[in-house]
Length: 208
Image (cartoon, rainbow, N blue to C red):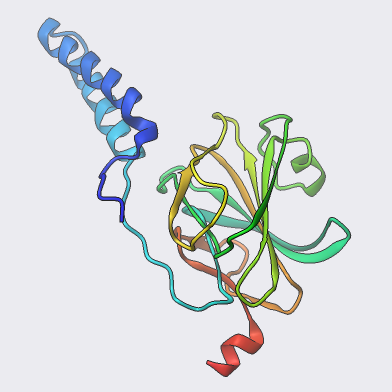
């Protein structure tokens, strides 16, 4: 469990804003503006605790986001259903592992930082893909697309445990690719929190 109230990715920015706020108070110059900026940074980099359900086949949202597309896609000659989500500006940016996987194939591709829900435009964006098999042997792929406001930071890329912290996303999109026999728990426009369930295998749910 991480008991820090603020993500480490915000330490420097918060410290700078704090110093500016103190100086503005001392100089009596725009201290309200700098005070609001300091509070905003504390809020933006907040680090709340989240918990995932214990369903083995489930795939969870890695960040607070909104579903912008649900569609069939091909990835490395396999067909998947992709749930594409846009990180919510007002949401928590701390990234959490979307599934359990000990051995993860991580691939990075450089590119642009465009905002688009178009499948072909997304291919122009910088992205990092995590592909692995869950405990039931089903392959799951999660693609992180960089947004306009900078790159996504990762702290963990192997031995993923669902719900554990793995980085920070200021802006961008996440594409969760699951096998065709998975049930999608969300609809277009659904707002989900990190650790919110996105999909699960139908047979697993029926047995439970």
